[in-house]
Amino acid sequence: MSWLRTTAALLTGAVLLVPQVLPASASTTHSALPAAPAAKVSPVPLVQGVVADQFGNFVDGVMVRATKGGTAVASAETYASKRASGPQHGYFFLEVGKPGTYTVTLSKKGYETVTFSGIEVKRPRQKVSLGAIEIEKTPEPTTTSAALVSRSVTTKARGAVVVKVAAKATKSPVGEVEIREGDKVVGSADLRASGRGTVTVVLGKLGKGGHVLKAHFLGSDTLAPSASKQAITLVVVKARK
Image (cartoon, rainbow, N blue to C red):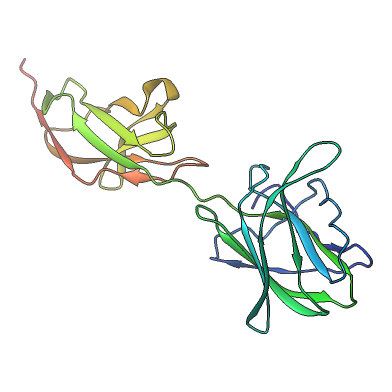
């Protein structure tokens, strides 16, 4: 899925942990990000790790919960822990209380939910590190609308469509825009940041008659795709000699 690899290690012994991901589109890979800082000394076992998104950005404010047999035993949010070299963002630790087999779930609004099962704590005061965990940021929703520059053109001319893409996440969405007649692409253009969500798409030459069109924004790593709800009809008439 991305650049992270699944890794997990016990600080006092090796173990391989296999993540379960909810929903299916969530990340299943973890990576060689900087190792989690050592947890504070505790009289009870700890489960710890560091959380980053698919772009390598450490994520604070992720809710991390540990359960045992369906019963909640510990919870915490990721935060910036203090280190001599500077804060380590995305860090968490859970005091699970006693040895046993646990399930850890990570969740935050705008991100996919990730679940690890079969995490074994074998000894009192043991520190179990889940290493670097990837939690995938979901694309922000967008809306797309379209309007014809002219409702009618001749067979010798090309029609044009003004497309607007809006997103709460940014005032300057970028990505590719297509104009389609059914499944056929009749025009495309790149939506650039300088256009602030607006681009004019010049169409290929179309045959005589009415053409029912829709605009499609193909999305990006951070923005979800969308299509115009209302179809527009371009009328092509025979050019005069």
